[in-house]
Every structure is written in C-alpha cells, then in structure tokens.
Length: 154
Image (cartoon, rainbow, N blue to C red):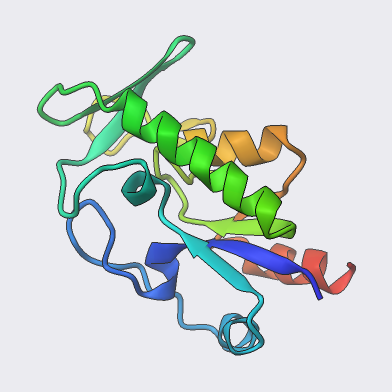
C-alpha cells in the first residue's frame, strides 16, 4: 500500500493564505487517512510563511519570482517549501501526490498569472514542479478519479 502526499489544506488544516481550509470530504480520502496512507504538508507553511498571509502569485517562471499582493518577494519561502516537500515525499516513499489546484506551490496544471485578477495560465506551482521533476505524479482535487485509478493500479 503506497503512501500519498497531500496538501494539508485539503485535509482540513487551516493553512490557506486567508486562514481557511479546503477540506476534501471524500470516502476514499477518509479511508486512506484511517489506513495511515496520507502524508500531509503545506509547502508554504514549512517554507516559513505565516497564516494568514497576503495571497501570492507567480510573476515569472524563468527565473522564478513569486510575490504577494503587496509586491513583497516571497520566492525564497516558496522554494524552501518546495524543497522540504520533496524531501518529505522521498523520505516517506510516496507513490503520488494530491495537491491544491491553482496554488503557486501546489497547482499541477494551472496557476494564477501574477496579475491578482483571477486569470489562470498553464503551468505548475513550485512544489508540484519539484515533485513532477522527481517522477512523482501530482493530481489535484478535480482529478480524484484519475488519482484513484493510479493508486489502484499500483
């Protein structure tokens, strides 16, 4: 039985930038939790960012630059969080990850464009990118069926 890395906000931890959670209430996720298969982490929290905090968006990918709404460069905290997320994933030998869609850390297919206007662009957040580069598949809360199929095939 493989372990699954999961964004802490999806498990009900109040670590979102606004101090809220994104609790994912699904019977399979609950079963995995009860079986001890879930390894939760918030890359932004372990990177040193407080909760609550100003929302952040990726301004550029090359070189990576993430700022919060006030213009403060928060790139170092996001990079530290991504590094710690990958370290935990490797240490726990996770088979895959379930991460928060659209997050500048955890988004796996789309992230906000940096204008703080709600516009999305193709791309992944820094923690999701680290996992993907290391061969760890990343799913989001809108891809649960794909996640379940992936885990069942292992």
